[in-house]
Image (cartoon, rainbow, N blue to C red; front, side):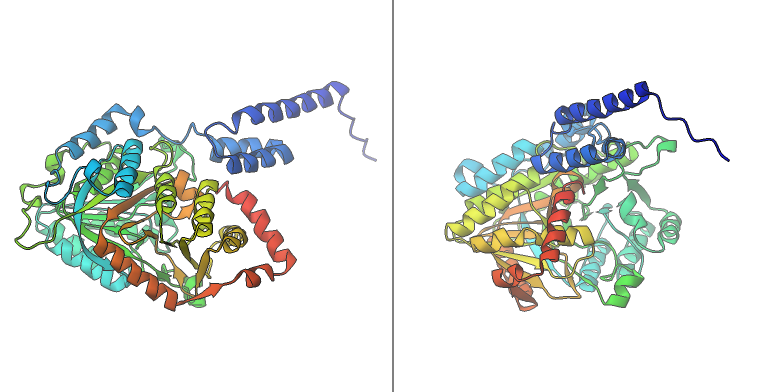
Length: 500
């Protein structure tokens, strides 16, 4: 017979209890630092329930030490951005007034975001709004075919498929005629698309300059939080024309067999721009290129002499615009603060399109305050979810919003609404890569355009009508009538969603 295992001595139990108690006490003072209350609560709950599991997870996914340097703490990166923005063309007085002379809400918003990001107010023209994925990639390819100096592209998810082929074939043609082609792709985003190894080999064979953003490879010295993402989507051609929005460089079904079997496709919205605002987008790319390659791109690398052209006779004056870069390199979540400011300034109407909606407490308060004060607030969200936790967490917010009078339009299955934009009243709007969720506010590197542009607002209102026709409106009675266990799962997922 086997001898029984000896009981641990009393001192061992006391030591274990002391360590457990110390972990909890330390966590109470450390975890809430630089973190919103909901996220702190989720981490503390995990640590208190399973301290010997929660602590390692916190150091890997929750600590700030591996977030990377902030822009204002990195002199070389700050100097790079300042040089590009300093040498950019200034808005013409006839086309754009100073913030003190422009619309009060717009001026206030741009002063706020400028102080947070270091990107000043600028101006530009809207070329077109793009929805259909195939048409969007063909438009990008046509722009690339006009390139004479450089093409800079940065995308979260990428693939070479029947939809994106025109884009990459245009890059090949540009490279063949001597145009400098730079491509940045997110390390994680690339790996989520089937065939990513073959895709990397094709990029190498093209001979273009390309790098992966935010690789997690400790053995090669790439140590960071593994949950960080560069979620930006942008294309710049010759410093003259730019595209930003929600399109990834991949087919609408993301080349994913499970999506293809279920008939799931993504519906996106992007915008193409010209004017001084393009230089700001170049600055965002140059910053990411620097962190990925350690190469400093100068204004001469990004703005050839032909990039700045005089306005053609009869051309409409440029509109007030500004780029908001956000992510761990920027303090105080400038995209979140911009969205809260925009909603709070609304006088008649707010519409928001977002595939993922897990808002900050301040954003929820702004939306419900606006609805209760008589502003028409509309949310265009997806009925189809591609992530279990996110989908259920999102639904947990519907009750409070519906009770306040917010209208929720659910984009019908199986298509998933992937557009990301905000429209306020009849003039102010924002569009880019940022979702309305805590991940986009704090962990993802995002890019957002804010614009006081009546034409872009009109185009986005048309997009709202298109989305409304493809959606069904959720009522409070329908939401309340869900079985109790559905609400229970929603609430549990809401608690843990702060850790995403």
